[in-house]
Image (tube, rainbow, N blue to C red):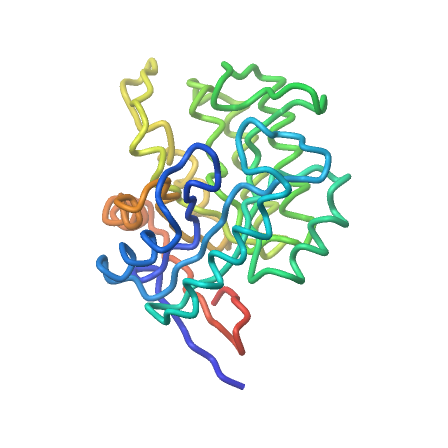
Amino acid sequence: MYTQTYSQEVVNLHTHSFYCGHGSGQVSEYAQAAVDQGLALLGFTEHCPVPDSRWSRSRMSYEQMALYEQDVKAVQQQNLLTILTGYECDYLEQYQGYYEELKTKTDYLICAIHDLSFDSRREYSVFWNTLTKEDLGLYTDLYCKALQSGLFLFGAHPDVFAYNYHTWDEEAVACSKAIIECAASSGVALEINTNGMRKRKVKTADGERYAYPVLPFWELASEYPVQVVTNSDAHKPAEIRAGQDKAFALAEQVGITYASYALVDGRIALL
C-alpha cells in the first residue's frame, strides 16, 4: 500500500476551468499555474451536470462530462504534479444514485448548495437573490442532507448563505451550528473558501465584510471537532492559490488547525 500525504499549503481541490461556463482557462493552464505557485496536489471540480439538465445556466452540459474527464486525464499523464478529477455537486436526494455511480468513476466529489428551487425549470440562486429567514432554513436542510449522504469529501463554502443574508442573527447562528454539527457527526470536512474574498464586499450594520468566509461562522466551527480545509475555488488560472495566506491567517485567528490529505493507493482521504 502506497501513501502520500499533503498539507493544505500545497493543495487546491476546488478548481473550475472554462468547462463550468462561468470560468476561463484550459485545464492545462491551471496545472501549469499550480506548478508555478508551488502546489503539489490539484483537483478539478467542475459543477456537476445532471441528466435532466437542471441548473443548466451555471454548468457544463451533461454531454460535455466525458470530454472534461478526458481533458483532465491527458494533463494527469504529463506528470507535472498530482492531479485528481472531481465534481462539485448540488445535492438533491433524487440524484443520490446518480452521484453514487459518479463517485466510482472519479477521484472525489464535493458538495455545495447554490440553488434553493425544487422546480427544474427555474433557479433560485443564493448568489442572485436576497435570502429570507425561510430561505436560510431550506439552505440548512439541503446542506445537512448533502453532508449526511456519504458521498462527499468536504462541503464547499458552507457560509455562502451570508453573501445575500447580511444579518448575523439567531437564524444565521442556528443555520451555522446545524451545518457544523452535521459535518462533525458525518465526518465530512468544511471548507474556508477564498473566492468570497475576491467578490464585492458586503455592507452590514456592523460594517463591511467579505461575502464569505464569515468570521462568526468559523469562530463557531472552532468550538467543534470538525475537520476544516481551504481552497481558492479558482475560476481562472491566476487564482489557483489566491487568498491562501488570508485563509491561513483566518484559521489562526479563530484557533482552527487545517486537516491534511492522504492519497492511499490513489484514493484521496482526510487526515
